[in-house]
Length: 119
Image 1 (spheres, rainbow, N blue to C red):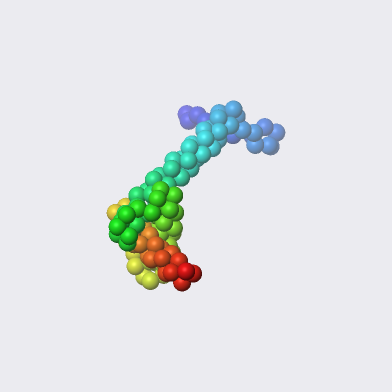
Image 2 (cartoon, rainbow, N blue to C red):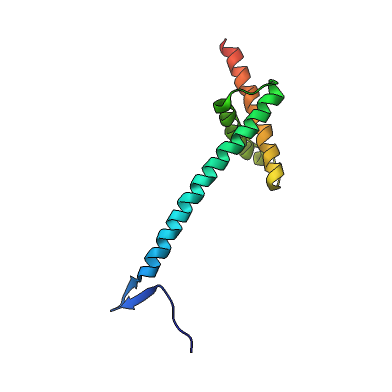
C-alpha cells in the first residue's frame, strides 16, 4: 500500500496547501535570494579580476577598482554578445574567462578611442 504524501490536499474540490508546502516555498525563495546575492558578488569579483588583467594588458597598470569592475563586467557582456554573432563558441569556465578578458580589452580600446576623439 502506498501512502500519498503531497503537500497539497483537495478539500471540497479546492486545492489547499499544507503548512509544509508553505515552508518549502519559503525556503526556496530564501535559497534563490541567497544564490542571487552570491552570484552578484562573484560577478563583481571576477569582473574586477578580468578588468584588472585587461587594464594590465592594454595600459600596463590597473584603471582603479571601480573602472576595472566595469570593464570586466562590460567586457564579459560584450564578448557574450559579439562572439556568438561571429560564430565563435568558447566553452567551459576557462574559455568564458578568456572571452571576458578579450571583451574587456576591446572595451578599454573603444573607451580610449572615444576619449581621444573627444579631446
